[in-house]
Image (tube, rainbow, N blue to C red):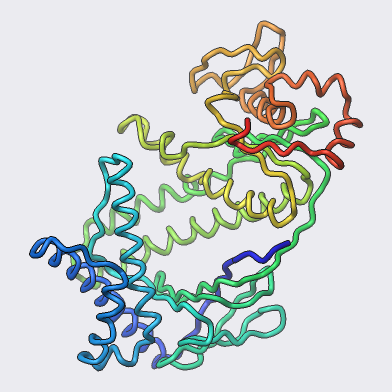
Length: 409
């Protein structure tokens, strides 16, 4: 497999002196970001001039000469901060061009991390065997003990230092050639909320993955902690402690969700040779409906369908598995019968599929079968499946797997 970039996160264990140095470096990057934003705003308001990334990089040398504290900060690291601001403006103008009413102009903000561009320039990773544990050397800060291990061994490229919930982390990008084992099954996956994923296999069997309801399990505790936080005086130490407790609980929920996603996607990839899913418009699913739909919207976002598809896709690429995305507007998996191809609109509350052709199954099972049939044969019924038989299908997967992409369906 050709080289790709993967991230691995290490936990940092700085000494008291190093922690103070990290906090001071973070403060200076925040100050730089906000000053660069103010520079762009004032230049446009007063002179009608748009300041570019390269303009601000040119002025960085003068800034480092006039402000001695910035001379101790790695120059490329400062450029990374300026690039983040530039990317924020690029995204803003892109949303303006597309007609988005909520374009979101870049804002002054507190900063949670800073980055380095090139390994060996301001930072160096010193790990043990297979990239496990070791030390991270940062210019002006020193050698910090780290713990963690990446799944793949590779060449370090970039580094981001992050401060979350009072802890320090290093997110390091590695260039590597990952490889995973795969199986022989062709599957169609329907993501949902009643069951997290319903999987239709080429042999006609169905498997279901239960929804872990990660956020719902902690919703009562989270609501209690947020009410306590809302009653604390702004700027007080009590409010900071209450805020830390809320952030810690959110972190637990996030970590549990990611762990579940990694386990599920790895298990699916291990047994598959072809994976078919439908294109999901997560923003469209969760941004409408008003207050009466907020519970459903919360469940959709908690189940993280975009994260699920992203993890599944990159793991499939590592294993050399065929990845197919079916265009929902064409296939209409939830409204189409996998037995006869008849389409009929259904309310979201209708969880059972009954058709005049005597097909009766759960809505999610029907959708998963439709997705699989579209991926293999370009139609919803998969009549070719019955004609050729399972053995012929398995043989075709080995030798002539159809290369169908979302744009081709």
